[in-house]
Each structure stands twice: as structure tokens, then as C-alpha cells.
Length: 152
Image 1 (cartoon, rainbow, N blue to C red):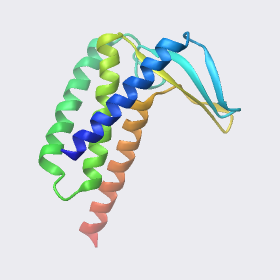
Image 2: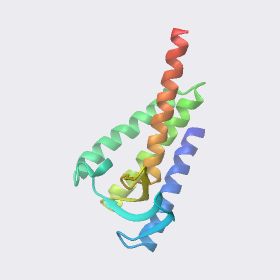
Image 3: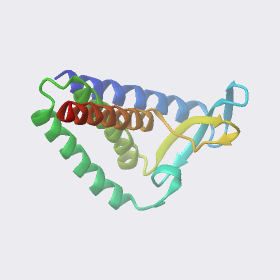
């Protein structure tokens, strides 16, 4: 149950922040948070990361439903005694659902976190994207730990 609470927290935070952006900023409008590093920029994306597969909504609907079902299955079957796996899956579930809500109701994903890392203008992203990335990183750590146990 705890892992579903993580997912719910991600979904609520993601949707609240996107709502604030939609209500308070015009598309393209930007607010400097940390000079030359972090900006809040209202952006929309009809594709996936880096804008790939623009306008392929049915593809995203099908893939996201499959991913959500898979994550729920693994939470139910594989997380007993593996809290890191559960947390990673909870984050990924929340992130997947957060962006899915946008695709279903807005027909695009609201992005707003704009960073410049070592002078590179990283693609604009959102809370759901962040949860997905952190979840995948934690999943990789879990897999490495399990691999070391098996070899150890």
C-alpha cells in the first residue's frame, strides 16, 4: 500500500504544479529561479522525451496502459522485502499516470522545469518526468544490489 501512496503523492504534486503553470504562465513565458541554471518555463509537448514521436497519442495511450499494468503487477508480486524496488516502482507508476492524465485530458503534456547544465539547454520537463527518471535510477540500483548478492 505504501508504494501506491508514493505514486499518489507524485500524481498530486505533478498535477498541482502543472495546473499552476497553465493558470499563471503563457506558453513560452519563463521565470528565472537560478540565473543560467534553473527557470520555470511554460512549455507543451505532444510527444515523448525531447519531443520525439510528436502527435502519436494513441501510441502513448497504449504503451502507458501496458506500463501501468506491468508496474502494478510487479508491485503486487515482486516487492515483498524489497523496499527500494517498491519505491522505484511507486515513483514510476506516479510519473506514468501523471503524464497519462495530461495526454488524455489536455492532448499534450505540460512541461515547465527548464535547466541549463554546463551551458546545455536541457529539454523542459515536469514532476512526472522527474519521478520516472528517479524511479528508473533506483530500479537500476536495486538490480545491481541483487546481482551482487547473487555473485557474493
